[in-house]
Length: 390
Ligand code: GDD
Image (cartoon, rainbow, N blue to C red; front, top):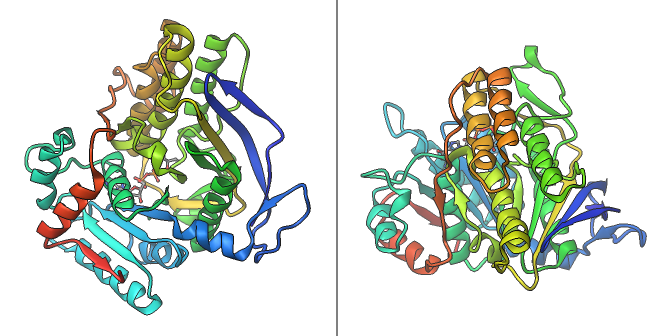
């Protein structure tokens, strides 16, 4: 892949936020291109891929769609599937394990599949000081919670980077493109605390009779605009730099992943940005506190990929919940003025008929834990997890 480096970035304290950069060529096959673009030669691409674990969260998606995603994750990257799928009346998880086993054995790739609700997590996480992840007898449901388990496993594997790709993606080619954008973008940033977030050219949801190619996601359009409004009012300079507040497809360095606070459920992607902006901008400039990622600071790159992002339609209630959880992050953060809170509530009522106060995100921190110890202990206890091809 060849990327055109962004011509513009904005600075918020120690956070450097790059504008969206363009994919010049989807498959450069190791050719570096002109001096105006950034691409990796073949060896560097394989090296970046092998250092990047790809986490696929899954909860009861169509098996053939999940299988397309599993087949598309480039072989050089270790694959980590974190499933919250049902065990009964149909044991969907066992089907997922079989798919991962088959494809991994055929292709010879390293893959780990775990279940989020596996009892083997419980004591291990409680002992490690991550008891908040539990809801009594199990790890809580929630996409964010699944991603946290993925981060722990990626760290245990010794990965330098971790990338996330949803399992309800109907276009395997898009999955390949996201992975290439992660490898190339993270190499281009070449920084200890780095993040690459995907912005889609078009989004669509199946079923096909309802297919519209939208330039903007129905939740991200609001989250981006509210986060930009928050930053504009704090800095007193208008900005529209944030274009990927809800990006489920994103990757970051493990150094960053283990330092930032994480949120549960669908608050997760918004929290990544809000936490970094709170800790390395607002707290630094207005409270004189040090940024935990200093002196390097955080670099965030946004990449607009070319494949349309086609994923499953899950209905208006699902969208409302996602919007409330996501906007709840900004609402309850130090970025939100009273006026912004009013605007968030009005946005939720107007667009999603969501009348309540948005929920406070559940926040988890990983900077005190030893992921290697947690995951080794978990794998030694679990009867559900599979580690294939090591
Ligand atoms: N492990 C795990 N645990 N996975 C989950 C859970 C869970 O509790 N809930 C959902 N998932 C998986 C789904 O199977 C899917 O692969 C992915 O997480 C995203 O969940 P969806 O329910 O399909 O969300 P969406 O497609 O509507 O929204 C996605 O895109 C948004 C941006 O447009 C998500 O990635 C959002 O987080 C994102 O903001």
